[in-house]
Length: 407
Image (cartoon, rainbow, N blue to C red; front, side, top):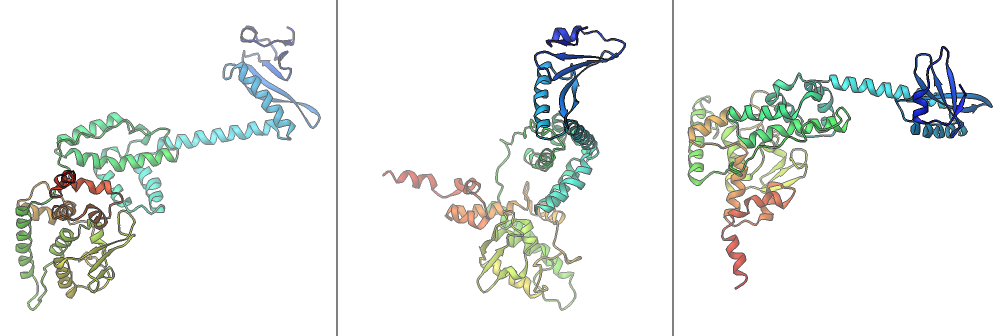
């Protein structure tokens, strides 16, 4: 067999193995050689000189790469050699890097959702100062308990669609289901960003249709009246349980919290984190600090008469420093009042109403009484006016006044 020939795919395929290795040189590119091994394997190598002596660098087997790719590889290898870079060493480093990447990918594939959540997502979220980290963990572990021991690369759109259908059948509303899915989406996004996943597994998952679900629930006047009456009755029962001589006006923290929420539009977490140093009776202002605000922006809320009266009465019998509404058992910030809140709503006959809807009630009442939307935006701490525009339809004669400008 001649040891030189113009390489073509047909020529290479027709080369038959011998009892010993056969080396053939490409006449089109004299630095490309092909070793035909006794096993039948055909390996491309590049010829170059190292320290003045002949050297060969393995490229890859024919079939794993094409003839054109092999010729391109020769040019790169010889260019490296001219620059003093050892092609053999570069190949070794590339193989080590590829092996390391493979091991990482294998480890990533073995990561179950629980492990990724606890060992990757939460530490990263806390490092970035996300305020929703604990809530994300709680929601994922609550709503996706059956997924926690699944590998993250095996959580599929089909599984999510089944979860949506099953959860809907249990009575959870579409809006709540969509809200519960958002934390899992956020976790998967981080998995993609950190290259634990090649693609977002939930990208094709659509939210459930919420057309028939009311957007912003707020208290009607009769509902607010019943809620206040229920709070009064409950508070009187709590006061009777206090020690003789205790002349405080509130039996516990529930009634003050609800009234503050109803009159300030503050979020639950903002109220739970509120400190006395951020309540100024002199200036009649509540400061929502950047650390406690969802938007991470400081804002100021003027206290109306009821808010000022409630907080002054509560202040008389509180610690007068630190948290305004600390957990009575631990002294730490409250986490939840769900059970008590549910009982109050049931006793008041108020249905389909969340604590967060007190915020909607605050905003809706302001708009219905003629408050400008930009002012409502400022009080609520909305980052954009678009978020506040959901209340625009409640403005009295809003469209009539606009059309009247043409007269």
